[in-house]
Image 1 (cartoon, rainbow, N blue to C red):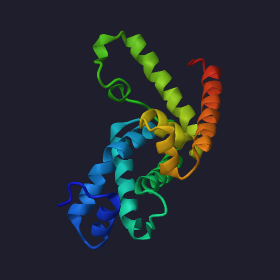
Image 2 (image 1 turned 90 degrees about the horizontal axis):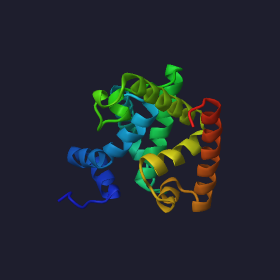
Image 3 (image 1 turned 180 degrees about the vertical axis):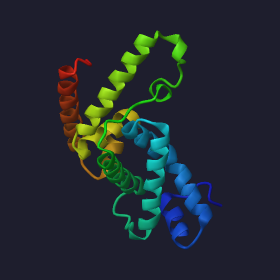
Image 4 (image 1 turned 135 degrees about the vertical axis):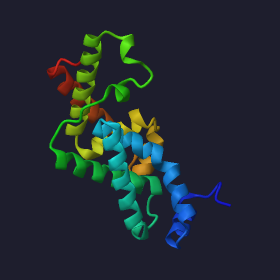
Length: 185
């Protein structure tokens, strides 16, 4: 039964042809990958497209996964690389749809002016995040959007907790500076 299978067990099964194991592996991680892609892309449809590209790359490269790190670390490295490629190919600042900014609030709960200001502020934050070096952006994503602990981040990307903290604080300092210049904070 595949209910409590580890990622490695599912990978082994998928490599030997089990579609069921592959589907379970994807479903186990698709929400985190989708949320990561959404934060970078800004729209649900782009995030879905990017997520599909990520899992396609994972599937194609699954035989090369050596288990030197946790699968999710490897998966997020692929997601980060695909996200960077996606953003470069579009040469644009992601725009956020209203449903992505505040999914639990309807547009009518706020004045149109407030809604537009919120959307613009969020778009500036996303643009500033995208200007961070990839290793800093990944730490910010995992800490604030995926709600990982420092220990989990360190384990998943294969660095020490102090390096995670250093990258996070450097990223926050850069973000603060960028957002102050833009009058967002």
